[in-house]
Image (cartoon, rainbow, N blue to C red; front, side, top):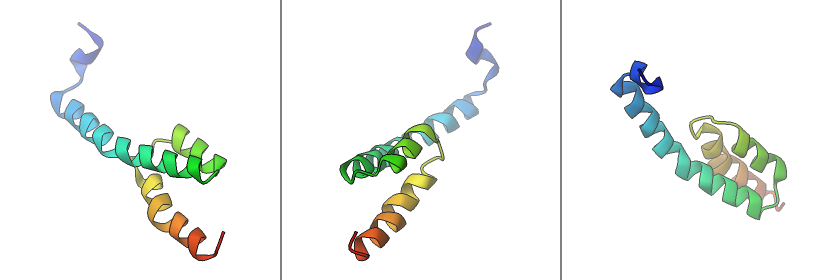
Length: 71
């Protein structure tokens, strides 16, 4: 029996769906944080897997707030 034999197809589809959901968000967040020179955000996005929750918060709430303050 191989290593994937014990995993049901539903779980595999869920993992695939979550991966396809979070990958674009992570890519955009990594790009924006690198472009803005925000090293700690970049490291957090690179190391943490939050199913795109942290990335969405950064893109929609953190960046606009910093931009409005003139930073």
